[in-house]
Image 1 (cartoon, rainbow, N blue to C red):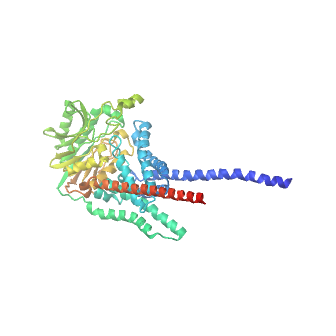
Image 2 (spheres, rainbow, N blue to C red; image 1 turned 60 degrees about the vertical axis):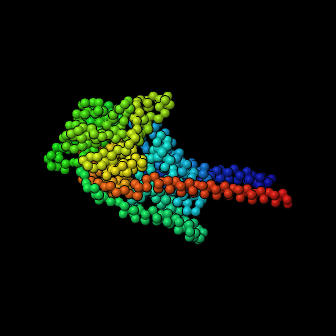
Image 3 (cartoon, helix red, strand yellow; image 1 turned 30 degrees about the vertical axis):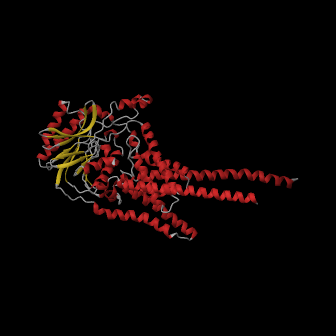
Length: 549
């Protein structure tokens, strides 16, 4: 009786123990790639300014490649979304500084969808020969889509914008931000492929020479190309020099409240300009050829307000040079974010209206829908800004100064159009006071450094509350201010007229990479469909054979 009971009880004890162990292992297998994807996104964020850890982008994409390679496209969607959240949540936290976490989280949730789609695409091409090439092109295709839709796009977080301090930066002069970003992503995926082949080779003692060569080239070619492209980077003057003054007047206090003190902001910038004028007369600084004020330095319309006009005119006469003034003006019932060229003798002689206005900041898409959800959102943007239609190039004391106002610096076309219209240097007047001391101002400063190399132009960044800077055509910052201080920068800068390959080619490098991505995805899909058909044929033949037997 005892022996019989023992033999019956054993399976009852063993069977329930095996199932939980199996379920636990499966859960771990699912959670590890998910957690790794999110953490690799965080690693990519850490590579961005204000930190100078640009090289962390390479292991970030290497690890991301590990999570995606060989998986289904559905898994790629989820892992890509987690990677996007890990990257964009901390990168864009500044968007909620004044408006709360709701808009920040909504923006990230939408933007991460693009990264999810990229993740799905990478899983498809990861089965192809030379997969790092196709995968890097798919990433750039995702960036291209994100920079254009919805509501005119949001290019913030392009991989190129995290490389202002990196060895790959000269590639911006070759093909702009798409080529620079492609090189970084390709190098990261290639790095993973090398590691994978080394591990696999040790296990199987088989080295696939062709695959290994492609992996090695994925890492070597971007680095070699970057060093070769350094010949395109120069800060030599081609059209003489200009002594420029950048004015940072500061604001009464940080945050949106400064808009209620528009006159104070104008007075601050006029006061700092007059202080500089006194120091010029005392011989402490060279006489500037022209002066650059930031965006929103005069939110009081000087065309309709005599007091504002008098303040600007007095500052221009004191410094004895033309000033580019950032104003908010109303014309024919429309509101414009405008740069105004103010001559000390003639007053306003030219204007530039911002063309890429910021959704939810300068105009409100879906106004009626958002108003129904939360009326506070519609009161924050009471009247939409209208868009300008022409590139802004001011002739200031003989120098041609291209203008890309704040948000426009993130858009390839907006900056390039000033150079193709003859700009010998570029100014990026900005107003970052709304975002307090967040990383936003440093991220935007890095964009301007990339633009300097991309088009081989001096770039000045006058900001209401900082950080204002002067950037040489090689991307190096020669002067910068602190944040929330009144200050001015005076420097002799080179004027240049030659065009880099990136300037000449414009959108063509990006289009070429989109074709590469489309070719890789098409090849992957066709291969998968052909594989399914072959499997179906084999299964059908097997069924017929078993039936006949």
